[in-house]
Image (cartoon, rainbow, N blue to C red; front, side, top):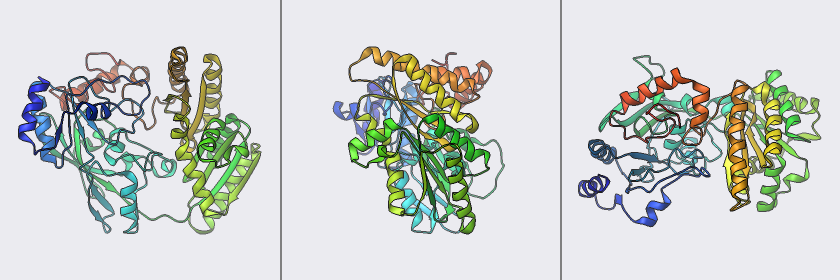
Length: 464
């Protein structure tokens, strides 16, 4: 079936848009999720317009060939991993910012636009697109929408879903639909646009996105604190929340990450202590000064070994750049299995303590980075290359961390998506009735069963 569909697509689409080359297909077969299974696609399609995507979906629907949408491939849950015989749609050539409306404060973009490129384009109009995942220099808006990505500033400004006004998508058996709105308000019917945000390509293929923008924010003030343990740093996070402070960022980087970045970029980060908290406040004027002082007081109140307000803008920006470099720095040490849990802010210290305990129980090297201000923690399990026993222990630790997060009233994923790695966790968190609701929606919007099948949950009645 796949070969027939690929041959049809080669005849129907302009030359060069359908690729069969084995080496190219191998490079598009999976995202960055360590150990998530993947197959060999039958073809890669690089569309340049919605009509190309419609052609792919319509022909694949007739023959039941799976379709997997892909952004930049920076995902960490296996959500964009190929299945044997599927058609992968890569949106790298649909990367235009189609419109920026300064009066309505919105932008219309194609899914292949890189997050930072959109932010730069908006800045030229005195506007700001807030969602900023750590992968913002590389990840695309389409991928951010697919996983409902968050980022460093979402503690104050929200996640991708909060900024998606409307979508164009190819759904069903090849129908092109527009969902959502471009108005400030609108309550006509179900929120189908919101339903597609975070759906990981399982309900349709998004081909255009309308996002809400904000005005440029006031200058940020940076607060830096070193702590002697992740638990104490977590107590500082809880103190900030208890004080009613809503920072524009509050990031945690532990000693393993600090050392990895130092070894790679020689920044001297690990010299200050075991755990680094980076806080930012962007309230305007005197209110911002008071907010930053209050955050500093919170750091000091729980026993920061060293803390200060940064007065050097370049130094402050370098620290946040180091936060973004933490994951690739750790990857240089060996395979990294990335977690992505979220717990109530006041329980961050408890969850961090549990992660440390789990690392000891399984004899696994677990590093921690976190969007700590909103309870979104990223424990990173690092194993030696070709150490199968360590890999097995890491996977067991991964699942135990999920269970502990759920036990604290948290969720199995805050921004990376369920993909393939979190399906068991979703089953535990959601329960059978809610999973059946998910399956009913999937069956209604994907009658041919072709959109990224097997991801998030299985339609056959199991989550795995």
